[in-house]
Image 1 (spheres, helix red, strand yellow):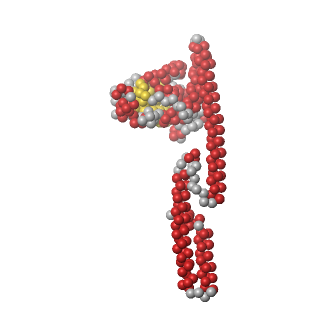
Image 2 (tube, rainbow, N blue to C red):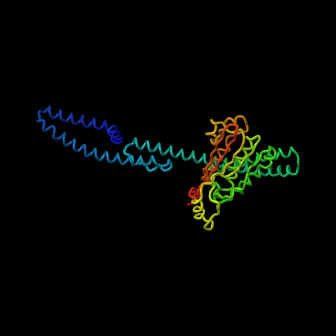
Image 3 (tube, helix red, strand yellow):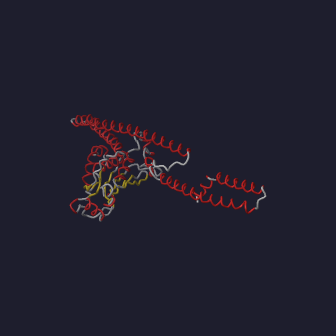
Length: 358
């Protein structure tokens, strides 16, 4: 109906001219006092031929309309095979579209080149700055003083910020180095917690942790980054009390991988296993109810972040991006003055079919 209405509107001038010519034809014959039948007969013939022509024209326009509809559903770079032009006006429009597409393509190539150069620069910078950081750490570890301990904590935060830069750069890269396989969750958690041992001791925060005795399908390096961000936030906003790391809704007791450790075995083993959820609880200041739905948004700091001018609102945003990429889930529950719990859910085997190349 939309096509028919548009077609009739497009051809309205042609219909008006046709009926005007028919009227002039009839009037001219009647002026010579010919019978009415003699005047109407050629008009009927002309109307019949006009309908035949109209049918062919409508078919041609319908084909072009459907082809344009198909092109609209394609990405911009594939919209090149336009229908054959029927008028100089159509030809001019198609030339303009081609010029715009070519200009857009050149602009996109320039932007991609600049973006690639920027990524290369910051990647080199992030790797080069690790050398003086490592040197400073070695020098500070040879000293045993309050100043050196506090400086080591600041140095650790600098390392976290550098890793955050690298993570941010790699997220949208085509070469994101995910190594998805089965890992012992205890090993990953222990390695992460060990990095914060000095802060736990200095702030006198109790760590409640029991061996988890479970294995998950994930990427060790990226999961460590997520855990570091979560534990870092827990320590930052907890002045006293404890931080608890435990499982919620763990799977079967035997989490070993069967069938020789191949992808089929990995997928089958986790199809039978329940979803594993790692919980990190703290007894800190909590999150305001109005801030809770937005804490994973990019750049959102909330009330706590505005109080702490160093907050960037990037850490939890990166955690959510990473978890989504690895088919994990991350959620938060909190209330003011009662602490926060972050839950990281590890998917079952079928959730990793795309990452594993299945």
